[in-house]
Length: 334
Image (cartoon, rainbow, N blue to C red):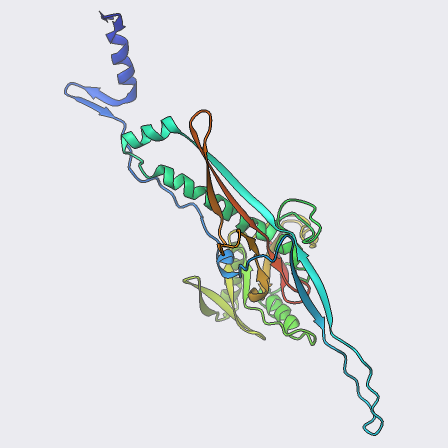
């Protein structure tokens, strides 16, 4: 070891060698990285992009639902004796929920990264991902949120649509999935009290694969429809051509869940939601500025000179007419 002004030259050289990929005469290879981070993280949801997002009327969000019209009756044309009746309307309410995420940036680490120039965009990317994390949580919770009541919450999560929608059917192992879905749609549109017109069938991609295999096995020709810029399969039903919309966030269940019993041994419950999309909405609160998306706030520097960023979204998800406008079909397959 050589000592120079109290410094150990040999020790510094050893540390440099440990950080280098390779050293030899005339060459020192040091760590270098590509400037782009490999990233194909799922950051959006087809469902969230297709449902209405109106401003909430308040907290709770309130609306009225008409469940019946006045009742007519036959009468003697020469002795008209009408009975007065009126429409039936019900008040509905849904509490607004809050979703949030926070990230702190160390001043020192941010400045080192900027000085290196290797990942100059990283701070902006991480701030954007605060919003992305809220979107991903929403995409999961719209189906599987654990709350059980819109008006009297039992948890701080959404009331998932699989819980809200009470019109249900089951396709047992060995039964035709396509026939089961078509029959359920026929049941919905045959309702004499309500004009139900489903517009989409949301399902997990694995269930979509089972449907594709069934169509191939029985030589069923599927229609094609473009949804969110992607061509998807569709089926002819009593409500017209209804597209299958794959949603990776649609859960499956190995046991009893969402009002359905446990599947037979060796099977899982796969869910398909037949939706009348114009009657599903996500009311939001954003100070009246009309912005339905999550918002990002910078809260200033902390004591350690850390920048604090917080994303927040106030909204809810509501399936209007959950007992007749929409339906969940549970398909039992391996």
